[in-house]
Image (cartoon, rainbow, N blue to C red; front, side, top):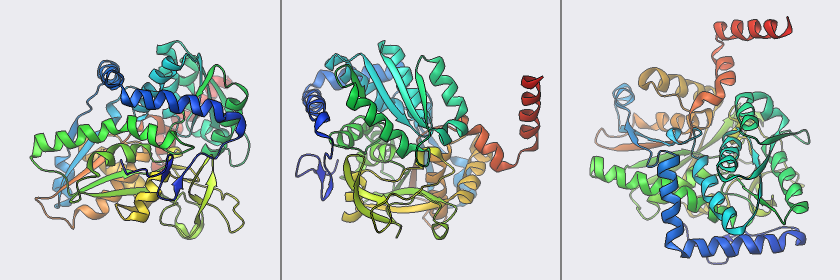
Length: 412
């Protein structure tokens, strides 16, 4: 991970901007987290649990058909979709769950956008016997109904947040309000590498299991490292996970792909690191790039992928962007859907809409690379959860007929 010269800061980004009422709770979390990092048995327990409960190590798949189609670099896919609950989110929640056990807390809360973090947190809570409440923007509740269903069946209470844009940033606000009034027995399982210290560092640490595996797998399978590694970027956890394995390998270019939405010129996007709509500011307890106006008011965000629809970005990625270690691009909805469809038809693999941004970014460049070069794409999750959004984007008539028939049946 990038060096942190001042606790909680990565260059000028990060920090811990929290209400005084939460200070003791954060001090407790930092203490337990630092002890866990210094205890080899903690990571051993974590890896053991992930291997028996969540299919780790996840494999790397050679995308031979896509490689032949583009006639450029060889394309490999890191299969985080094969994790339990279908995404990289399990890595973080299981790690935080083990910390919850050490702290003796009995209740967890979380925010979620795409719903994958919510499902993962609800799953962890069920396994560890914890009470669980998930905050989710009302907009996201509607477009991610399958995940809401599973969260509730796993025993979690799902709260639809109707404030603001009714998306991820509003869910985070509500989760912090809950925590401020339930500190004694509650831990906030923040889902991405953002937020106040120690969350950016801590979430990245748990997600680093992706990069550690990927680097070793590439050397074992191909006897070389990839020339470029692609990951989608919302808050930043899956990108930090895969990138962390290659930070010290200067020959490996790291590329983050943000949600271009309907285009930067429309203002309907979630691009923080390559957009004139973004400015350095403080929000959700940390300093980073946020989509905000000249008065510091947060702008509305948009993405076809609910998990990328966030107003801020990891302070670690902000520092890596300014230092030049990570290059950032964006992909618009049309490119994302095209990349998703191509991957489905060529490889029989169904990426989540979030992950499809990384595919779109890679597909844009791979043809211009040499055939003996390698591109590695982090497939952060699978597309099951996006069936409603994907079917609508594909304008699938049979799916539309199915939904109408189901609606008529329920109203009969």
